[in-house]
Amino acid sequence: MLENYFPILLFIVVGLLMGVLPMLAGRLLGPNRPDPEKLSPYECGFEAFGDARRRFDVRYYLVAILFILFDLEVAFMIPWAVTLKDELGLFGLGAMAVFLAFLTIGFFYEWKKGALEWD
Image (cartoon, rainbow, N blue to C red):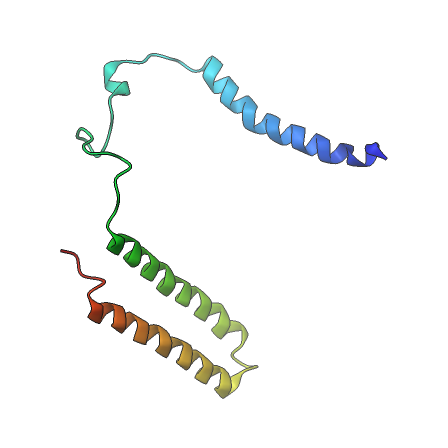
């Protein structure tokens, strides 16, 4: 019975070896010559300032969410239009128009509320 699980165990072992062996080879065979220039912090060519764990403004996340929303809208519309152009007809066009209307209303609402303004 356990011999049925041998291919799974072999797959796990080979996968772990493929992940671990290159890292060990790089650590053991690669040159290790640290100097102050290599060990210095790098952030766009100047010394880092502030804490890396500081809080971001909520507007940053709001703009990111809006970008994802409208990006997914396009990613949804293209395959929808290509695959369903003959099957849905006028009903499909109306459904997509309602979908786009809701997204457009939401976009203008965010715009009027000033969510896209940076101070």
